[in-house]
Image (cartoon, rainbow, N blue to C red; front, side):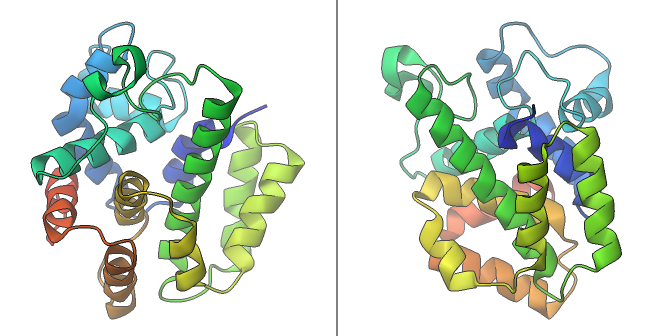
Length: 229
């Protein structure tokens, strides 16, 4: 059975914007060094495109969480680049990288990663809903792809209900526990939309302001993904 963390790559592959894949490739190109240090083996040869495909397809055994690991790396790099406090490798227990970039070691860490992954998925779904509801046919297409990726009935129903519910920006922001997770959610949201409507721009602005993401962190995320701020 797939976890929410493992489903992020599949969800991105089937639900993100037309520009999302190239943006994800931009991110991987810039944070690849950090991911290499988080992996047991170096990233496989074959170019950014090949590695992007493996991560989005959920086939990255060397990197904890696949796509979630990339988002965690983007968030950490953005916060450190902006001079904000972020969990670095030497600040984690036993010199480990923060959750999202490594395999969780305890039941509490497993639960924390699942919650983190759920928030990332919610962020992508909310971004897609920002300028209108997702059509029933598109919902069914996405859920069918998640089923192929290993999502059980309960997980499929969770995704379906998230897509069907009206956007509750204040409630969503209240669920985000830290600036680090907020930065991950913001990066994931940029992968889900083209950012070519006022509604989408308003969503991103509300997300950044509501979670108190520093403007320098926001700008760094945009730069990493190759999206004009």
